[in-house]
Amino acid sequence: MQLFWFLDLKIKMRFETEQDLINERAAVERFAAVFKCDKIEKLGANDVDFLLYRSGAPVGFVEVKCYTAKSDQFDKQIISLQKIAKLSQVNHKKTAILLCKYSDDVILWIKVLDIKGFCKLSGRKPRAGSSNDQELCLFIDKKLFNKLD
Image (cartoon, rainbow, N blue to C red; front, side, top):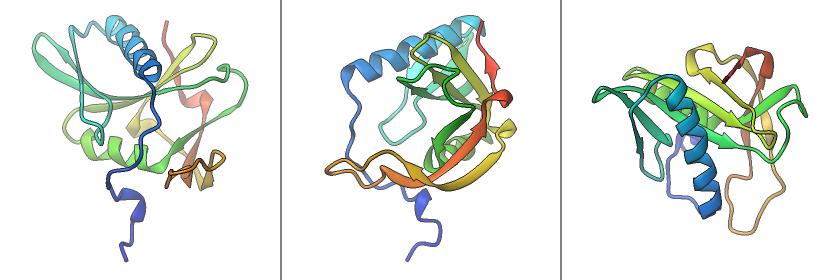
């Protein structure tokens, strides 16, 4: 039995729609424009979402989460510990960012090194075919996030 099962990167059923991917791309494009990044590379299905470049050099990794809730609906942001683990794994190469876009078009972001919170088993109502709707999640105070202008 693997001790840190949440780091297991087995292929899992995907529930992302084409619209989800369009929303993620739009959010990272806004972020990249503010930070003057000139290239956005979509990474593989089991990787962090994007790698950003400036003048041909990689400058940071970005994991994008788009939510149907408004940015002020909850005071904590819940994120899968698996996502945080992936961000931590790439952070030694370049800065890793968690980027959250909400239904009110607000974008909040935080560097992985600035993330603090508490863990507990949480998630969404289990869906047929999903193995990770209920999993260890990190609860991050939204006051720690930066707001994208």
